[in-house]
Image (tube, rainbow, N blue to C red):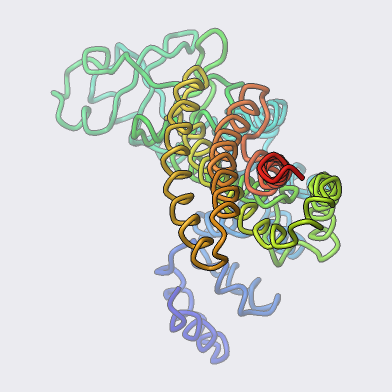
Length: 447
């Protein structure tokens, strides 16, 4: 955000210009307040927060990270906490409850309306990472026999307590989802038209137990701003809005990056995570990879005679292993992305392998030709150049096939395909490369 805004807030606080500060704060976007609070001490944070209107204070509150929310709660009065809980939406309330320590949770729930506590408890029962855990129960609902005029009256009355008014959901008397109508359709329709005559019945929807990653795909595929969530009887129980989908997308992307880098995923930011936790999240995978890398060392040890006869062979191992690892990473990255976006369905595994095989043959041959010329010119030994280049072709083929097969296999086994990315894949490719290389060397030179 603009540093001038932070400076102005600090200046107004220091000069005790409270009225001007309140007016200035009203014009600042809620998402910018966490940055402002970083530059203020705790006393000034509380002062600034208390100058905000009830509605804005709640909006600012949900923008804060977990640690700052906890600090703020510990400084607020019960009445102020009650105001926050009355204003925030249910999905934000559930997130808050899940992230706070038990002593803070007790205080939050004590200042939450009984009916809201019941809803929060119901939402907390859904399995982790499902649609039920990220939906909100505050949505706009209409009856099919309403006129457009009646619909606008209801939207005006209930709109402030709805997550979005862009989409309204048409429900039966037993709350089954019948259709959806957006605000644009209502605006251009005749005021006496019935809602049932303008509603859309072919609705993109999710069920409460659907995986949250699948929900993100719905937003991406259909370009919707909200997805209704129904139970097994098709009763509407909540909606998921685009901002929730973006949050899930960011979480899943961060998790995939960490898994691909051979680290255990963490929910906290880099600086919020302790040094010990960082070490713990990394060391397990590093131990696994270190032990698995011993396989490569064991293979090399078995070919000591070949290395003794032709020591120059050792100089080609890093190039072969590096090329194999890079080729495998290229393929795995494309396949993992394709699986994540449904561009590559699991049922098309054979087509994907066939495509990667053809790509690997072309890539391998091109690299081999260049490599043969380089080694022949540099070492004046065509036979060694040929052996290394043949190894290179097979290495590229194996690496790209592994980079294709392993993510698909992990997806089939209900595992995260990112596990089969760079570190683990590279370890497997390294061992395979060394085995191929020395097998060809011993055959070609009869060592």
